[in-house]
Amino acid sequence: MPHEIFKPGIRVLIAACFGAVGCFLQASPSVAQEQSSSEDPLVPVCIPRVASGFVKCNFENGDNYVGYIVNGIIEGRGVYVYADGHRYDGEFRDGKPHGRGIFISSEDARFEGNFQNGSIVQGKVFFPDGNRYEGTFRLVSEVGGDTVTSQPSGRGTFFFSNGSRYVGEFFAGQPFGRGTLIRPDGSRCEGQFFNENLDAKATSCRFSNGSTYRGELRQGVPHGHGTLTNPNGQRFIGTFREGQFVRAAQ
Image (tube, one colour):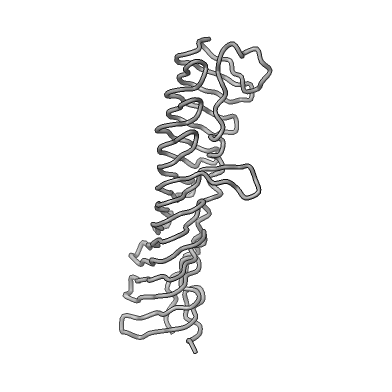
């Protein structure tokens, strides 16, 4: 009976962390001075009162902006601070984040990279718990809802605060597709991952003690049908549960 291989209990709850970026999907309000008498809470008071140039603006809803405008629209370099605590510091085009920028959510998640039409498309995310993601992003619509957010999709790397990392494909904010899970001790599993729990099929693992494993994973550990081969050539073929061999194949 082999020893337990590893049981880190890792979960990649990454999709939930990206809801804040959805606020970028709407253009920032016009700061044209002739609208200052409107009762619209998104109409600001700006100093100086110019249509183009560098301004400081306060909105009735509590937002504020410091930076450049062109013909009353946020354009160029600036800092936009939302009343709810979100903050974007970077380049704008036509009232939306566009170009290099940094977005810091009210939960202290930090997004750094390239933005297009109000959404991050390439860059890094640093989470308060020490985890981080580097890679590409795509817009994702919630099923049955109107919310659209920019989430990890395509190639990327998720770095866990415990030193592990997942390198591979993402879809809608979670590992989905071909990828590799690498542990701090050098153990690695390659396979087809399909959810935030790091469940996988058709995996090939090599552990730091020289053992190898081929089979299914759940939460990144052997779970389901598989074959474990020890360095001395001893093989265990059958069912695994949470990293332990529990039943031989019939």
